[in-house]
Length: 321
Ligand code: ADP
Ligand code: TRP
Image 1: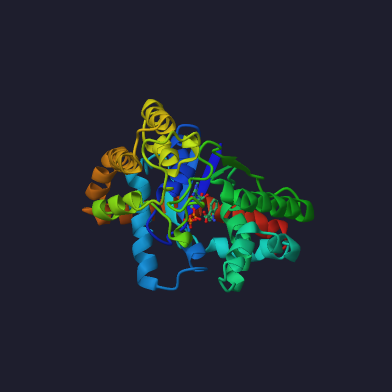
Image 2: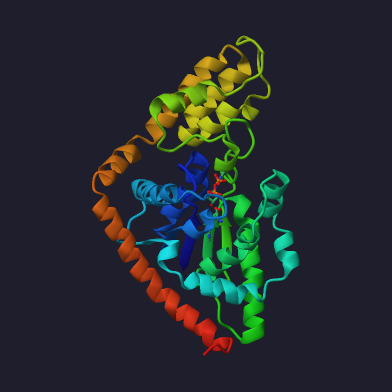
């Protein structure tokens, strides 16, 4: 089994990225050959600060390695270190119907939010298809918001195979239902673009303040709350504490007597402890950046070996060679 996923270096990673992408990806290392990449080409659709992209790319590598990506077992590389993906994007783009791209939820959501679209944002699913097909991936672990993009990859891959003969492996998305959408601090999907995130490696004071500022309703602590399971702090606590601890807080909130301030304090403590070991590992890695650059270089070499074979297949099948 060949497993592949990418993450954009467009800002500090948050716990939605952790539960939706990194944790499943780290666990999958036990089930197959994993390829994970830093999607720096994709980040260009929303970020135009070069220094920041460079910094974010290293930060994302540190985050993944700190959270358990094993560079001996898996391939970790920066997308733009294998520019063959751009050639494949062109080839696939010529088989991608406009209507397919016009139906993309993420594109529609972004334009509806007032982001003025460029060609890159519109063509983004084609680049994502190239990312996946270039490495013969058959399993793509992503959060629910990316499911449609993987389905589009399947459509485009099938189209190529029927136009030019069997060339690409057709991938399947793997969605984690229990943590498919981690809610943000305002209750909508946690996302860098909505400014509602809880960072994995955030500064202690900043994160504490963010958690303590989560808006709750005006019911008194004593009032029983039949809707305790819908409480945002409870939902987040379920991710970063044991089932027993989360159930205990939920029951106390439901029964009445637990104040929102105490609940938020507990959420902070559990969040902070949950990532403690990763935080220590990240600090070690950050003190030895040459080692991190060497891991990325080795990853790029290994990724490129696969990419040039697969691209060669596509070039021959389509008459470019
Ligand atoms: P963002 O929305 O913050 O820009 P990305 O689009 O870069 O995040 O997402 C990176 C990965 O993390 C993707 O696999 C995505 O599905 C997953 N992901 C992002 N936000 C969430 C969330 N709130 N819940 C679950 N998974 C998420
Ligand atoms: N589009 C994905 C996101 O924003 C990142 C990504 C780029 C990706 N290429 C990919 C994920 C290929 C899986 C496979 O989250």
